[in-house]
Amino acid sequence: MKQPRTASSLVKGVLLTLLLTAPLLALMFLARQVLGTPFVPFDVFDLVSRILPGNVITAGIDGMVGVLTTLGLSVRDTAKLAEQGMAVGLTLALAIIGGAVFFLWQRGEQTGWGTGLIYGLIVGVPLAVVSATRSGASLTDGVWTFLALVVWGLGLARLQRALVRPSAPESASAERLNRRQFVVRVGGAAALITVAGAGVGAALGRRNEALAKAAEGRRWSATNALPNDDAAVEAVDGTRPEYTPLEQYYRIDITLSPPAIEEADWRLRVEGLVDTPKEYTLTELRAYEPVHQFITMACISNPVGGELTSTTRWTGVPLRRLLDEWGLQDTATHLRITSADGFFEYVAVEDIENDERIMLAYEWDGVPLRARHGFPLRVYIPDLYGMKQPKWIESIEAVDAWAPGYWVQRTWDRTAQMRATSVIDTVRTGMMLGAAQTGEEIMIPIGGMAHAGARGISKVEVQVDGGDWQEAQLREPMSDLTWVLWRFEWPFEAGEHTFTVRCTDGNGEMQLTDRRPPHPSGATGLHREQVML
Ligand SMILES: Nc1nc2c(c(=O)[nH]1)N[C@H]1C(S)=C(S)[C@@H](COP(=O)(O)O)O[C@H]1N2
Ligand SMILES: [Mo]
Image 1 (cartoon, rainbow, N blue to C red):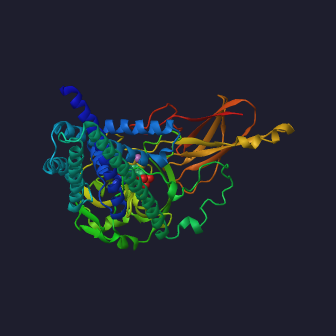
Image 2 (image 1 turned 120 degrees about the horizontal axis):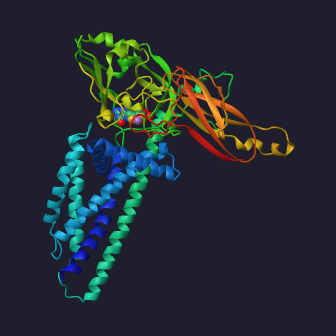
Image 3 (image 1 turned 45 degrees about the vertical axis):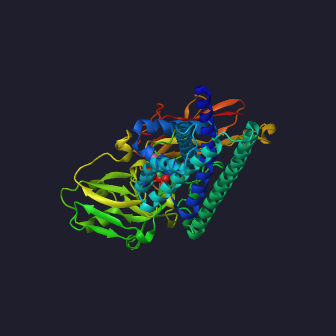
């Protein structure tokens, strides 16, 4: 009669492990929101995503983007949340396996506290190491995670003991009733703690966000007009905001929560092949004559027509100006820029010397960089995708050779030059309502964006239903580094229509029209909108 017993230990193991792990995770999440303590699921997920091979990670990201898009969700708004959900799901799955192993191991016998403690140690020590060794973590982080796992082990032992009672003098049915009551009570408490912990934690997160925004001060755009404010061509209603509100700015990075950096503790270290190694505080960097640049950034993972691209006004200091202070040695050919989250990339010294636009930036839209966007310092390198441009910079090391950066090591393009791309944001079909009966010709405005890194846009063309390509009007951009908004007036004809857009960059090169996915060098292909009119 071993079989049923094993099976029932397994079922109990799974159920009780969930009842224990879910509230424990909720409380840890709450503690994270209040105290900034580590949250095991995020630590484990970040570690896994760092050590998995590049193609596995890329397939994972593609899969997630695919699922979100299929569900009709905004990738820009939900990608991080989805990853965090996956982290919690992964942890619950691992915990269930751990619990099942425990209950199988201890089946039949009543488990003592000592066994629970030992189990907690076995699982807790490696996880504590993971928590303590992530970048920016301290020993206390490891201790916290360790304690949580000890509580988990003891909890398993307690639950196991409650279920495996020695044959009691009471009748079998009374005992079964007691057990049922126990499960119901524990289950109720677990559900309550989980919902309350996760709910309060999430609310605190929103409150922290609001406080951070309030402390941020007044944004440049709140009191200033955009440089192209009086441009002759106006954007069609329904086109994306030309200047992205910071809340809507896309976000892509390798960890589930941004490194928390205190300005007082932070220094930019300059080392390697320099005569004068340096350390800059943020105040010292701010003391240089600031430069402001309007810039459109994009992620190399952005599909054609995707949301992973945004525009704002950057403030900082040209890297070239700092270079002179370091006494760069003749052998130094590249700078290795390293970030607080373990991310890194290389920039050629020659490029910095030839391009004043390469900057170390500390402000977006006139306020300090937000934590998630790289506080306190990030770099800007024109014409390259975001994967080349570290946020949360901590050190710059002058070196004598190029080497592959974080995403290049993980199979992405070495140069990552931005592709030319154009997108239809809106076909103003609402325009024809009402006017339709009068018989006069109705013009339907169609609008969108085109961008080609730092190369500018010289032409945008629209094609309707496979007809001739017709030139759209270009709105003067905010700068040479931003996207260009365009508009096209199309004489309305009832029926189903397909609109296609293409652009030509400032060097006269047309965007690539063959459909290629983002990996490894950035998506190509034409954006289309199909509309029933
Ligand atoms: N330190 C660090 N810098 C980073 C990244 C990162 O993961 N870590 N991601 C890069 C990528 S892939 C992109 S697209 C941009 C995104 O910047 P944003 O999140 O501010 O939009 O940051 C880049 N810089
Ligand atoms: Mo990216």
